[in-house]
Amino acid sequence: MSRRIYLDFNASTPIAPEAIEAMRPFLTDHYGNPSSLHWAGMPAKDAVEKARGQVAGLLGCDPTEVVFTSGGSESNNHAIKGVFFANRNRGDHIVTTAVEHPATIKPCRFLETLGAKVTVLPVDRYGMVDPEDVRKAITPKTILITVMHANNEVGTIEPIPEIAAIAREAGISFHTDAAQTVGKISTDVEEPGVDLLSVAGHKVYAPKGIGALYIREGTKVEPFVHGAGHEAGRRAGTENVLLAVALGAACEAARRWIGMPQVKNLRDRFWDGLRGLFGEKVTLNGHPTARLPNTLNVNFVGRVGAEVLATLPGVAASTGSACHAGSVTLSPVLAAMGVPPEEGMGAVRFSLGRTTTWEELEEVLGYLDDGSSM
Image 1 (cartoon, helix red, strand yellow):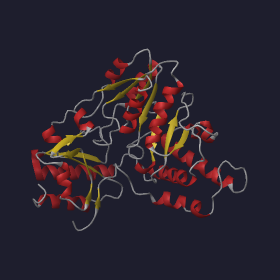
Image 2: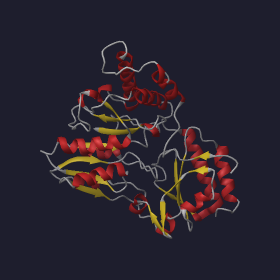
Image 3: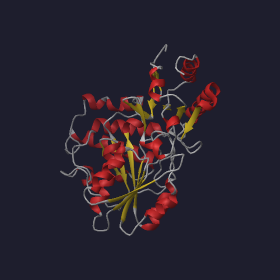
Image 4: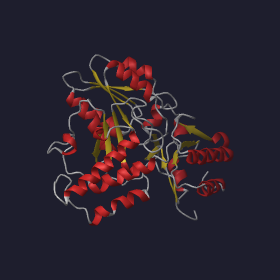
């Protein structure tokens, strides 16, 4: 490869220029504790609250419903464990799906050791859960439904509004992991009517180590970190002012990118190019239309994804299979979708971003076309 090409934006994004600029004063001048009511603390407090409002602006909620966290994993843990511990008098049953991120699945498994009952619903061949399966899974003891907004591997967008309506009708809290959707498609919390929504900063062009959790007013959630009364008593620990202002600025900038039509056009053009090169020897994972605009997960049939990537040394992308002692194991997501092993072993995820160009994608196609990798 003549240059490095980054096609792994679902894994992490570069920091937006707006976020970098927002952080600069807090690297040198504004070092006070935002809980201190004096000249050094007040600028920090004001900055945190401005950032909270910027996150709320992207989510379409009240700023008081936004809690800053250390990232998407903490937000998911806070939502899932918080609802469980705050509602044990009402029930102990949680409903989720087989394609969730480990930051959702593992907290559920942990809660099972404390007596929780967890129903893991199947998905179809596109990675989509059936809302009617959610309805049928509800019991009198169900206290939480948690379904991701869109899958990080294949990009399939789940039917969140339909599931939210079912949860609301049953009086059950509904959480969605929106790490992959914030800044890409609409995450206005009033559209689907979710009660809790997780944000991961480094997926939305903010730094790593910062995130947010939307908690609808009136939703009972036990604090994830106990201590002093930070974040209106919902998360103890002095706020990370530097990263909070970065997330706020990144969320404000992201409002211009909702839908990502230019990125989607590049993705679709790249997919057409792959099909032109390989025909039936390349297949699509995920829903053909209800899919993140930047995500293309494909199977190079008859190949191993890691081997394909190894022949593209300048390209940063991800694979959906793992090699162990000569055997190939599909990711839990592809396995849950029923992707045939002979196809799924060749899975590669190309995830595009704001800075991706057609020249970069054309270069990847050209390298694949020379026959050295296929």
